[in-house]
Length: 335
Image: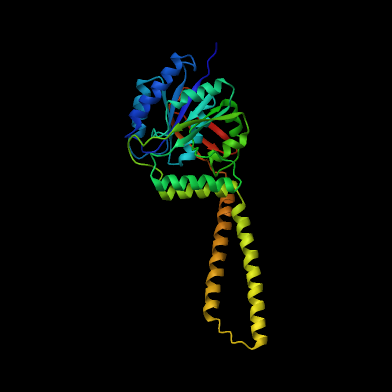
C-alpha cells in the first residue's frame, strides 16, 4: 500500500523561544502517524522563516542537520504571514500528497493533525480546523475575532467561523490555489473558493506556549481590513447608499428652508450649517479613503511584484536554492 506524503508547513517570525517545543511536538506527530501507517516515511515538517531578526533560522538549520523530518525555507526579507505561508504551501505541493498548515506558537492542537489525515483518507481534499473554545484568548481578542467573522459573513464573504490557517489541503487543491493571481493574500477566504470536498474538525485553542504574539492590535485590524476589501465591494456600495441618504436629507432641508423663507421665519442656521459642513466633509473624506484603498489594491495587483524571495532552501528538492514567487510566474529556481 502506498501511503500519502504529508508536509506540515509552519510559518515563523521571531519564534526562537517556542521553536524547540514546536519541533518536538510536530516530530512526535509525524512519528506516530508513520508508525500507525497513515502517512509515508518521507513526510516532513517545513519551517518557513519569514525574515526573523532572532535566531529562528539558526535553530531551523540545527534541527535540520539532526533530524530527517525537519526542512526549512528562509525568506530574504519579512514578507508577512500570508506570503510566508503561501511560500511553504507552494514549495511543499511539489513533493507532497497533502499539506497541513499550522502556526509555530502551538495554540492550535497538534494532536488534531491525526484527525486531519483520517479525513483525508476518507476522501476530503480540505479539512478545516475550527476553534470551538477560545477561553485561552483575552476577552477583547475573542470578541473582536468573533465580530470579524460575523462581519465577513454579513458582507457575503464565504469564510469558516473561528477558522484561522490551521487546515489540511490535498495536492490538487494546492495546484488550483496556485492559479489564483492575487497579490493581496487572504488565504482563509481564498481556500473556500476552490470548492473541493471539505469538512471540519473541532478543537480547543490553547495558550501560546512561549514568546509573544506577533499579531498586535494594529496588525490584526490591518489584516481584517485587507480581508474585507479583498473579498467584498459592499463597503463601497454602503458609501453609495450613504450618498443617496445624504442627498435625500439635503432635499428635505432645502424644502424646509424654502418653506421657512415663504412664511417669513428667521432662519439663523449658523450651528446647523457648520455641523452639516463638517459632517458632509467627513463623509467625503471617508468615501475617498475607502475608494483609495481599493485603488491601492489594484495598484499592487498590476505591478505583479514577487510575493516573496527565497534566500535558502533546505528541502530535498532544492538545497540552498534561491527562488521568487509572483502571481503570474509562480515558482522558479536558479542555482
